[in-house]
Image (cartoon, rainbow, N blue to C red; front, top):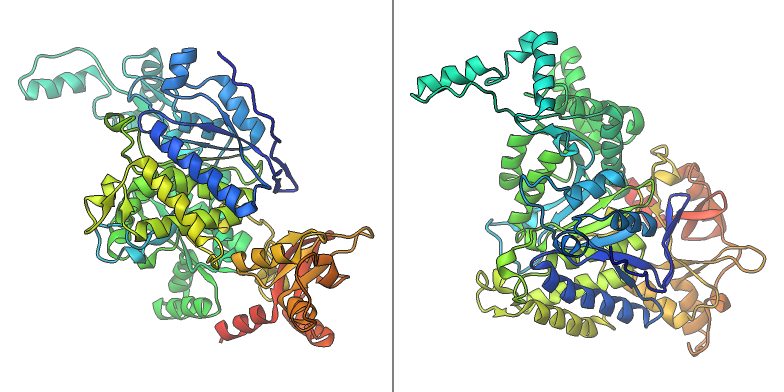
Amino acid sequence: MPLRTPPAGEIITIKDGSLIVPDRPIIPFVEGDGTGRDIWRASVRVFDAAVAKAYGGKRQIVWHEVLAGEKAFRETDNWLPDETVEDFKRYLVGIKGPLTTPIGGGIRSLNVALRQLLDLYVCLRPVRHFTGVPSPVRNPEKVDMVIFRENTEDIYTGIEYRAGTPEVERILQFFAETYPSDFQKIRFGTVAKTDEFLSMIGAAPEHKVELGIGIKPVSRVGTERLVGAAIQYAINFKRKSVTLVHKGNIQKFTEGAFRDWGYEYAERAFGDYVYTWAQWERTKAAEGEAAANAEQQAALDAGKILIKDAISDIALQQVLTRPDEFDVIATLNLNGDYLSDALAAQVGGIGIAPGGNINYVTGHAIFEATHGTAPKYADLDQVNPGSVILSGDMMLRYMGWIEAADLIIAALERTIGQKMVTYDFARLMQGAKKVKTSEFADAMIANMDRVIGEQLESHHAVGPELVRPVEVTPYPRLSVGALMTRGVVAVSGSAPVSDTTHLMRSRGITSVVVEPDSSGTWGIMTMRDVLKKIVLEERDLAGVTVEAIATRPLITVSPDLTLKECANLMLEQNIRRVVVAQDGEPIGIISETDIFRFVEESR
């Protein structure tokens, strides 16, 4: 194939579960087929502008095109070249547009192939409504869900055999000889059954069996790593419930096992944090329904997360009629496919729905458009680039470039609020101005300039909690680790105070950790330090560095410390917050406000 030489940038790596992202990371991209070309040209300008404006030119994404889909087939006679897979492996983080996969064509799907080859076991689909986006439902603002869709098992594993092949014949023979009663359940598995029905409708006998066969694997380990990621997310970010969506009433040993293994793992690994419907059922059987209801209510009043389940067809109805009863959803692949698109329809359609495929252990992640290629609109500069733009927002958050991501969301909301939208929204919005794909990007970039200097709110559309590696260490409920805000913002002591205060304001935080000095000692700079050492002393910010007003050494506590011990330390030291450290590295922060809220919410 014609090799594309990687540009001069640096490679993202992972160490101890955390990504190490250089200032000029190489990001492989696939522009996509059909409308993907227009969408990518617009989206990449938005990404580059956000990064440049957020960091004043200090950071830059070094884009590296890799081939897949129609473009790859034209240039290499291969729909998914091995070099593309290797580049996604090497550079860890990538993004792609929509790709063509002919139905029944026998070619590998890029989506499925990459998910399997890189073991991207979580398909992450956050779904929320942006104010002003047209919706077919009355209250789209009630939709605020995060779907954890299993990516490597279920029927999407791709173990299936075409009718009439020797593989199908061997499987049918095996079933007929080994499991004859199960074989009888295959309605048209024999020539006799096929010809019998044809004779009933007056058709000529065919004397053959045409039957395709697929296999649906579902494992305990695959279930546990998906459900664990969903529950840990709910714990970290104070979600109220995790719903296991399944079709276990029919497929008892695959979908049903997913539900049962999910409940078992929730109780075993997260017992201090959750209450499950399986517990409710056991209490009901032993003590009656009233006792079970009281037990559940007491658990929820104490702040525990409810782990429940819903049969897939009922769930598809209830996410429409009662969306506020769903929060985090964990489900197998096919159910997640249906749910993701059904929910997207409620908030504006898949044209504005982002997606990411992630392995939280290896760090590999590919963010993608969730819609198709729409070839009849190709190269017309008409379609909505929102799905790729929001997937890029997810990618930036995964990289830790939150400021650029926040800028994208703020600009997107402002542009939609101005009713400057592509044709799909314009036809549904009164008073809208229809713009081209490229013009929508122009408007977003112009709005970034208007947003700069204002206080950027922390948008929850696809916040960092959705894509950052999941913290796997559970801590006792009344410990510092359970209550801390996970993750800290660290700056160099040589950073200008003026830049750092802007960072704090844009992130909505009241302190930053200061990286170790020459002696290896960490420090902290808070809003109070700015008040005391800049405002009260009437100092000019010009030339003042963080080191000049920071406090060293940093007072830290272990995540295993009890809340009582932490509160006592704060009172003794007359401090309002303390950094949580493990193995000498800050991993979170806890404040007196956090403890106060915990006490209030636990009433």
